[in-house]
Image (cartoon, rainbow over all chains, first blue to last red; front, top):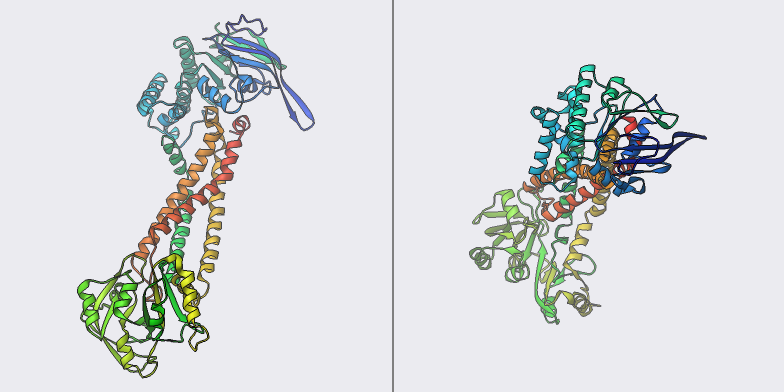
Length: 239
Length: 379
């Protein structure tokens, strides 16, 4: 159950309270997020929509510990990440967050296998253990037969699948997806969304997704609109 | 080691650029290897001179002689373990271009004072037995194809006439950097045959009981002959070899200047390449940070890349230089000890790694400071 009124019961996986983010550009201060509240339960699939510049990606960056808020707090699975900084925040990110980008952001010099393995190189897993994890993740996204292909040898949809495998290979607490279908044709986009749905519904993942695509948003349990720096629950979604 | 594949993959991204950068290290370190070899060859015995040997020369000039009677008087000084002497001959073998140093020496004492010269016992005995005998260094023998039993005629320039010698033996160095381009023959033959200069020697070499005693013994020798017609200048063999080498000019400075320019240029080339490589990969570095690579890890990856480029190029360049020096002196006698030691190769490799690290440092720090949010926005 997703709530935006700050009235969560304390069992939420992700709890955001009074989140503010301001930027200063020249002499102008831009207030991107204003007193934002959010509660997301484990296993939820939330879509954020809103016009360009409304702060969707900023919110995602804050939730993923890539950026720090001007004020307010974010707590994930009991850890207040807004109190973390530097190396601790990076380590937290490695353990808890799987990122999926619009442009896939695979390293072109590495094969699909090696791209998926990247986050695991930071762990203490042995080579054999890493191999097992990577093969499982690639099998889950249906690319076990493409693991030695380089990104340039894959279609856009396949690249995004590799990116998803990279995001889930460490078994993170939640997934953050920034326009995951934004660069794909309709068919590939549907396939990616079906995969995300499967991860949430069948594997119990929690996913938060920014999208402009109403068809993609429909797959989510809840669709939230960002308006003037605050979240508004919208109709739609399957929740 | 598990990150090596990642670093290596990045090197294969722009193969031409990586090859050219590695190539610049190859050329630079090849040049370094040759410069060090040439410096070593010019400074000749400086680096290999023994600490327990003193050279005694005429205080006025190296080319002026000393009386042979000094031998007994020097031997009597406390701390002197052995003494020998030599004279420069300056003969010509067939053609003036075939230059090589020839010394008239006192055979037994010379070999005692210079254990660095290794001669088979039978050949040593032959040298001691025949007054026309000569000992030829391995490099010299190789250069002219001299063999034991050959008869070598030298045209005297200081003492005119044709001087004939029998090659009694060929000596090797106890270490690779010992000069084996010299021709040694017996001083008693010179003494007996020469028309002038009898009763004199070119210089003495004194072997000490204790190398730490060099200053005291040097002073004692020079004091003994002070205010005589033949005053002496006694110095360690190293100082003697250095002053001898300086007659050729300040090779050390020349090598230092060229070497510094080469390494500085290398730093600029490699630094620029690494800066471009990092700029091109801003987005990818941001992705690495996003998935959990710390600032330090990113710094390490970029530095490792720079060091790997430098290390490969440096190693190839140094090994090529080593290969070239294995052929021996390419000048036909000017650079007798044309030898690149493994210690110099290790030094060159260390310098390579330092330059590689320095070249990668600024781009690596830039990568480390990269803000993920800003970088991802540019992807």
